[in-house]
Amino acid sequence: MVYNLVLFAHILGAFGLIAAYTIEAIGLRGLRGATRRDEALLWLRISRGLVMRLAPASLGVILIAGLYMMATSWGPRGWTVVALVSFILLAAVGGVGTGLRMARIGPAVNGASDPLPDEVRTALRDRVLLLSLDVRLAIAVGILFLMTLKPSALVSVAVIVLAIAVGLVAGLLPAQRSRNEFRSAAG
Ligand code: HEM
Image 1 (cartoon, protein in one colour):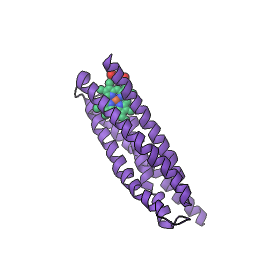
Image 2: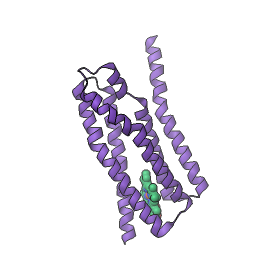
Image 3: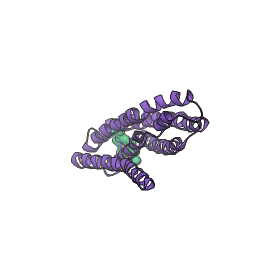
Image 4: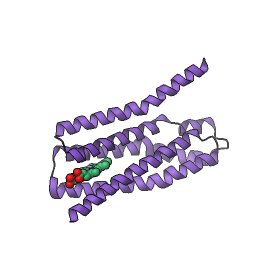
């Protein structure tokens, strides 16, 4: 009974994480197109205000519930250990790739003139923000695969490596496309 409630909390945390990533994706889209200060501040309120609360809370619930289930029922199996390491990687990518950048962008937009100067717009359009989101989303889907199929350590590592590769390609592809578009627009 307790186990099932903890599993429920764990899955609820996973829902929360995906919701946070969805809001982050919408916020990033808005920020990338923002030219005015008030526009950027509105999108920042969505990304920072909502995502910065929902994502860490969800990660915390997922981790505590996951560790509980691991300790009481599963032990250190291939899939649980790889999931745990991947989960730490996912949180680190979010903190370094997005958290640090967003912490700098907030004050930069606040203190910026209107319309936003080029250097602030460049910071808002930082590709690393998109790359970070795509890689985290792909890792989360990879972990979900491990959770449901519970494969061996080797297969688990292969799944997560594949997920990271897919995330990197997805995050880098639009850059290629916009460069090509720029080239064709330039003649
Ligand atoms: C993005 C992160 C994660 C997601 C989306 C996720 C999702 C899920 C889902 C959907 C289940 C239910 C699977 C089932 O009942 O067949 C589950 C179960 C489980 N998860 Fe996670 N999880 C994540 C991270 C973790 C981490 C980091 C750990 C280890 C500390 C972990 C440990 C477990 C355990 C032990 C179960 C119980 C499996 C069972 O009773 O069948 N999870 N997870």
